[in-house]
Length: 381
Image (cartoon, rainbow, N blue to C red):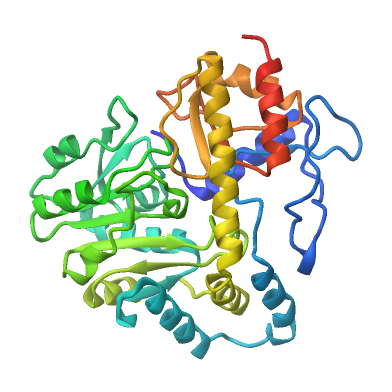
């Protein structure tokens, strides 16, 4: 079974760092103590004291937090003794305005990971059946399994997209939820909104569709967009969003869910914690920093196009990417490819069986992408 939870991803990546002798040193710090997005990348092959490996394996956004969020984080230190309380409501109101949806249709989470776990518990306990793609992000299904769920995994299609036809066929009288990560992690592929809407409309009334849109802000294909509108239509749909990706706040931990008020109340009833004051304030600030968000999206998509052009030139197949990463066929066992990249101080992804020659590469800064592409051309075929 593929394990794609954030916790295990971090643990596995840490082992890779230790095993390769590339223990991650402290990154250079910019404004408000945040990792600088302009820190120079290590050239391939550079090792030794002071060398910083290029980390392209965690789907992090190297350009965030935004300047507005960094300033708020710094100014919030004196208030760190306080609970956010009323500020939670202020953030929900800001998100409601942003999403053009009533405030009672939104719930906050400590990252979308907490909400995924809550939904795994709600739909998986007492043997509840949950359907998901294979491979996909597994925080929900892992937690559901621990809650006693019955899981059905449906392989992605030849284009490495969710196979909605087969997923619909897998729905039974025992199915409580279907999980769709769109764009999907690790493949990066995405479904058009109208395809998801048709799928939702085909389901039995009691089945919940959970759509994880963590990477939606990086999508640029026509028709690939949020399906949050299904919620206001009264559909049994939960849409999950996060500040970890486009907002560059993976280490701060805040996300939100959009659903009907009855489902929002169910999620709130099993909430495991609440966001901290730094996360709440930084999220509000970042939400309004439009210049940063537009520039980050432009940079990520531009670098994504650079990578796919080079892969095409090298004759290496890749899934159509719509996130801040690219999933491609290295043409050799991934363990060997990983070793060759590590030797050049570049940390890349891990296996996603059965795609044992495929690698998921995170899109870093422009200099980091340049270093990766140079290494890609330099390694033996």
